[in-house]
Image (cartoon, rainbow, N blue to C red):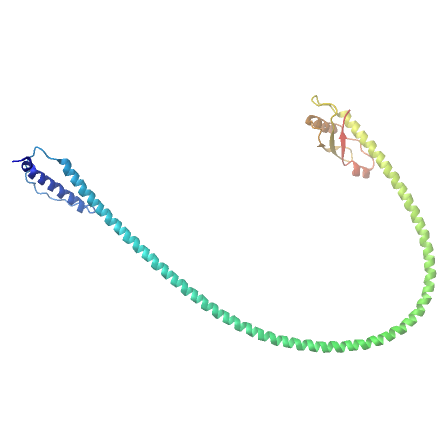
Length: 313
């Protein structure tokens, strides 16, 4: 007896048992497994050599084949479902387009009906407008006739009025000549009076001009004097910063009260040295109250808000 004949029966029985178990698991993979009462297996002839790896490979191959079959069925069902949804979507689009076409047809019909109604209304309005225009033209013709009669009457009245005016003019001319003669004498007397008044007014203007010029000169002199006094007082209160060099200058804007008290001071054009500029502002504040002119008008004009060049020697 050969080795195959000796162990062939054992191999076939073992392989058949594995195939039956795998088939049972494969058929019931989507359902609850049922309890199977297995009959006692026939006693297998003990073999000294059994290739389990080949049995396991065959079992794995059958299991993979079954899984591939189920996956193919699932894909097929998914594709059928996808095709069904696609057909439903296509039918829905066709239905929607048909409804849209029906809606367009309905709207076109309503528009045609509306346009026909509007056309009829326009024709009626045009007819009524022609009737109104005819009545308006008749009224204008009547008004023209009335206006012509009125103009004829005015023409006659003008002729009568011209004759009356001519008569009045003759009387007025005579009266005017007498009045002109009297007026001429009166104008001569008035002219002489105006000449005298003009001469007096010219003299008064000359006096006022001289007085104004004198006041301007006095104001200028006072402004110069007060400005010099302000600069002198500010210079006397100034303390040169240790870091500042000689020859610096800045432009300062000052706002004063009528009493000469400083309301505000600000350097509007700096020297380039912030310490020097700050010392200038401090000097102005320390010099408060500053000298101011007695004239309130001159103060308001020149010293309520003014600028001066701070250039201490």
